[in-house]
Amino acid sequence: MNNNNQNNKQILFESSLQKYLKNEINLYDGSLDEKYNSLNYFRRSRIHWLYFLNLMESYYLKKNITKSDLIHKIQVSHITILKYIKESISLDLVTEIKSDQDKRKVILFPKKQLILDFEIFFCDHTDEMKKLFNGKEIIN
Image 1 (cartoon, rainbow, N blue to C red):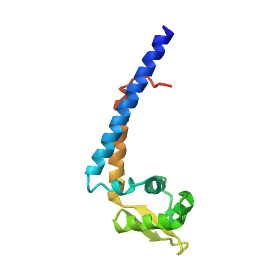
Image 2 (cartoon, one colour):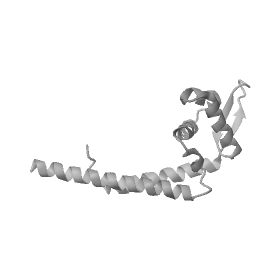
Image 3 (cartoon, one colour):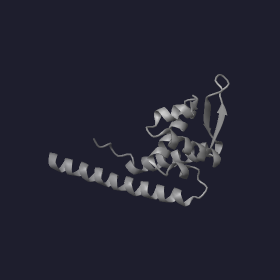
Image 4 (cartoon, one colour):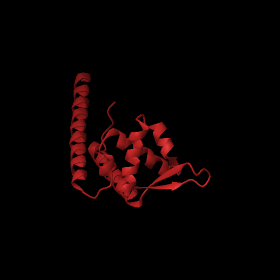
């Protein structure tokens, strides 16, 4: 009986993985079809995505993040991250503001459309993850 129970758990686990992978592929393929989805710029590479996640984390924590902060947080050359920041600003995804306290610091903020696209992405993604398990027990 114990072997049968473990087999059932393994089957459920593999089924969940298959659903998850199919969902992730569809989500990624679908979002790339949306030409005007601002997240597409940040999904180009791991570094782009880390830049985006740090930017959004600071936004939701209501903390400022500067160009310098990103250079220190993301392990890549400062030239690369500054290039990505410049591109995201020119694409009107991010805005920069000089700090009142220290004019050398440039604070970065996500634009409203980027915030909206992220929130839609988050809701869609979490809804799909909830559907994946259909209320079944979590597998350890």
